[in-house]
Length: 426
Length: 161
Ligand SMILES: Cc1ncc(COP(=O)(O)O)c(C=O)c1O
Image (cartoon, rainbow over all chains, first blue to last red; front, side):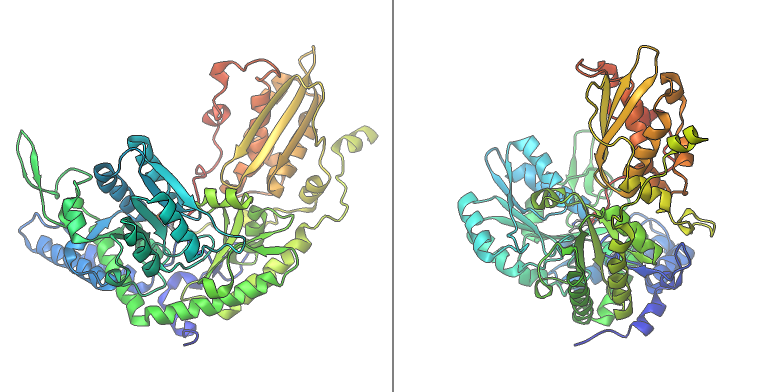
C-alpha cells in the first residue's frame, strides 16, 4: 500500500485551494485539531436544509418523516462504521468531550465510590482527564496516570503493572495520542484491563479518522469520537457503549426525547439510544457525519492509514535531521501522521507564526495535554498532523520551513537601538 | 470569514527592531529595592512576565525592570514598554492604553498575537497597585482585573485542541 492519489482527492476539498495571508498556498497540517470537509459532507447538509429539514421523531408530517429517516439512517451508517452490534449502542452526542462527560456522570456516579481508582495515561487529552477529576470531587475516587518512558512509549508490562497494583474500576485511554501521535494496542490493553475487572473507555478521537474500528473486536465497554476530526461537522460526536451497560446506566441529561412518559410525579425513560439523547439532537450534523464516514470508507481506512504513515514517517525523519529540533514522540513505526516537536531556543508560538508565513498551518501550545507537557518538562510544542489530502511536497515544505526557523530567530549579537540614547543625543 | 488581503499577516511581525528588543532587552532582570511588583502569564502559550517597579516620592516610575519567558512578541514588547514608560508619572502610565501599546510595538498583530503583546502591559498596570511586601488589597488580587476593563481586540484564548 502506498500513497493516495491526492491530485484527485484534493478536488473534493474546496478549502484546500485557497491561499493564506502572505499569498502562499495553504498547507494544512493541523488535522489533529480538526479536519477539513469534503464537498460530499457540505452537500449532504445543504440538501437537508434546502429540501427536507425538520425536527425529528415527534412530527407526523412529510418533512419530519424524511428528516427522521435521514437521521436514523445516519445512525445506521455510524453503527456500520464502528461494527457495533445494534443501533441502540450508537448515541449521538455533541462530541468526544460530551461523550466522556456522559460516561463519567452516568456510569461514574452509579458505579464509582470513594477509594476507587480511575486509571488514565499521562498523555490523555483534557477531555479524558477533567471529567474524571470532577468524578473524583463528587465521589472521592482517585485518578492515576501511567507515565511514558524516555522514548515516549508505554510498554505492555507497564500497563500490566499499573493494572495489577491499582486494580482500577475504569481504565480510560486514547487509542492514539493527539500529541505524541502514538497508536496504542487497544485490543490487548482492553483484554488486560478486563482480566482485572476494569471497565474500559477508549477515546478514539484520533483513531476514528485514521483506522478501521471494530468495537466488537476491541471489546471495550465505551468508545467515543468526534465528527469534526473525521471530515464531518462540528457539534456532533458518538458515544458507543455495550448495550447491557448502557441499559444499566441512569440517563444523564433529562428533557424531551429521552422520556417514555412524564407525569407530575416523575418520568420513565426511552429505550436506547434515545435514553441518552435529551433534547433536539444534532440532526443535520448527524447527516453530515454519515456522509463523512461514507466518504472515508469509500477511500478505505487502511489506505488512509498507510498514506498518513508514509507522510508521518517522512516528517519524523526530516524533523529529526534538523539541528536543534527534538521530536516529542516515539519513532514512526509506533505512530501515525502526527509529529510534535520543539526547536531549541525558539518558542512554539514563534515557530507557528513563522510557518504560517510560509503557508504551513501547524498548532502551537499544549494541545490540551498539559499533564503530559508538565511530565516532559516542556511548556509548549509545535504539532504537524497529516491527513488523507496532504502530500509529500507539503511535508517537504514543512521540513524546509522548520529548517529556516532557527536561522530567523538565532541570536546574532543584535543591539537594540535605544530610544533613550537617540533622544538624549538629539 | 477570510481575512481581507491587507491582513496583518502580510507584514512581517518579526521586524528587525522587534528581534533587537528580543535579543537585547531593556532592563531585563530583577530590581533590588523594587517598591511594586506583579506577575502574569498567558495560559495558551505559557508566556510569563514579572515586572518590578520603583515608584518614587514624586509619583514617578523611577525604575522599571522585567523578567520573563515566552515568545518573541511577549518578551520584545515587554522591553519596548518598560523603555517607554520608565520616568513617566503613575498617572501617565495608568493612561497608557492598549492601543498605544500595540502602536508602540509596531507591526500589526492578529488578535491572537495581540494577547502576547499586551501581557506585559497588563502586568505593568497590575504592578502599580501591588506594593512589595504587603498583602495586596484583596479587591485587587483578581488576576484579570485589568482585562475585564479592557478589550483585547480578539476572542479570549481558550485551549487549543
Ligand atoms: C485524543 C482527543 N480526545 C478528545 C478530544 C476532544 O474532542 P472534542 O473537542 O471534539 O470534544 C480531542 C480533540 O480535541 C482529542 O484529540
